[in-house]
Amino acid sequence: MDKERICEALVNANVVRFGDFTLVSGQKSPIYIDLRVLPSYPKSFDAISGEMAKLIKDLNPDLVAGIESAGIPLATAVALKNKAPMIYIRKKPKDYGTKSRIEGLLRENEKVVLIDDLITDGGSKVKSLEAIREVGARIEDIVVVLDREQGGEDTMLQHKCRLHAMVTLKDLLAYMEKKNFISHEQYARVLSYIEG
Image 1 (cartoon, rainbow, N blue to C red):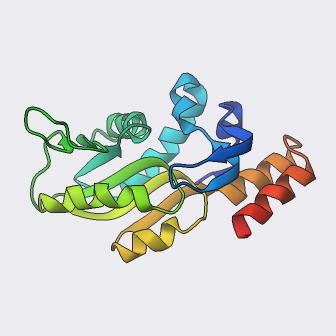
Image 2: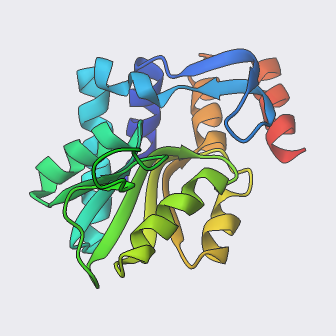
């Protein structure tokens, strides 16, 4: 996988913001990565979803599953590139009709690869793993564009799932510093936050 190409595509899509942010996990952060904007940058989105499709093809799933909401466009692109069936997982069950968290056809024993934009501590992914396993399907792999390296990999391992991250936040920051998109001070500040 070409990590530099992925970092370049992310920078070109303006996904990185610096400031003071509160993440889904509740953690405070000096950096925010907004991968929901990727589909608005077709070249970057195509480069990233193309690399992701190759990675997922090697995992040989029966189908791919996107997590609502940022994982859905990525899963759609990968499914189309790999000619694979796709489902998506709602964050909460709908309160009408089937009241299901899973949209699409998922059968017992099918091997699923879960797709999302990024992972922080992994807590928000656990419910998606459980929803897939509740119907008797198999989920052993989750693929994300970016790992913030804040415990997500360990959380996934505790739930018998391997994390495959295309790049880490450290990879992206190192690329941005090398190409002079950020100062050494910005780089050092975020690095100490990640490692702290």
